[in-house]
Image (cartoon, rainbow, N blue to C red; front, side):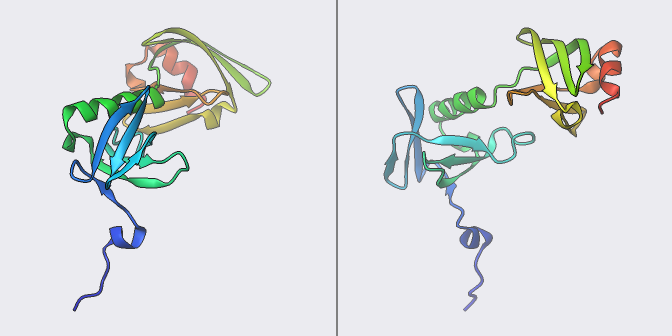
Length: 170
């Protein structure tokens, strides 16, 4: 008899499917029924937030206990997908930077005036080099001093002046 355990067994992973989990809204927040147990409020986290937006989604309780992982959101009925999508889009809200109008450095801080997909914004970064993360495919995540994230979806799509302002930091 083969007594080898699978990685899921060893790690204690539980994959959530429509057979063992149902998602609903309770007030303004997502709730779930997992393996017959009701959870009044669940928190959703992307395991791979930059690469797999709708796959490998961790579902946790208010006490940060993982109930399981959704392998692929498309496995769930459309109404439940909408609940999960809405919560993840709210949590991972990331304006897209289209143009850098101004970038000034002063005493270790940088002050940006940018045009985004939701309008013009002023953002401030401390330690600019560490606040810019290249994540592949020409994408850059910019994190401001308050922890807000902004995305440059493709460095090559920025105008020449915007790219020149960034070259020093990348």
